[in-house]
Image (cartoon, rainbow, N blue to C red; front, side, top):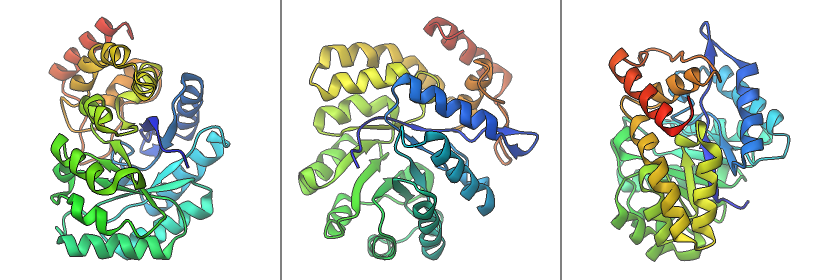
Length: 291
């Protein structure tokens, strides 16, 4: 698959404690219209940690159905249990997902050898394109570029969502893996610097609320028009900041609610956006022209 551009880390809308399937389908239609390059259901932004397995599978199935082949679906299927990750990835394949996104195991704090064996087992068990996901701030472990390079013999490992925040680590990844591995940003604020080094796009939180502009920034960078890409980056930067005032996806769900797209409901232990930060969010959305 062609992993590139603005791929949205889509929220999982809730209403009265249940997945709001109608709202999710409507969000997907909006992304098709806006030029988004792909959908990631059941990632961090999709609150995968609090979905039951039945809900997780249903969200992926619904996303595949709603996308209807118009956008690729990269299903979040990671876990801190390797066997569970294998099973979720098998389901993603059977549901028709185009690829699977697998976060590094969280809480366990595996060694680099453990990370290598985890991904090796999944890659051998499921014949689906696999995108690794490194985000040390969420998981407590940083998958080093050398470990990623060790995994390159497994041809179905096609990309990595790199969220360490380290531009040097991105440079090292690209140096070691070259064209063999597609690097995707996992942090909206540094997507453009990453693309200047050779990353191909982002799995984006901001794309939930400004999908067309995120897409235009990345398409400009892809074609080498860095002046236009910088224009969009500078315009979008206040959104990137405000969407991380509290733990993701609290602010982005609050923003979508203000835009009338879905409820701001999150699941415990996440709590609704504070009144102070909601006021700041409203100000930024209004200044951007979204409200």
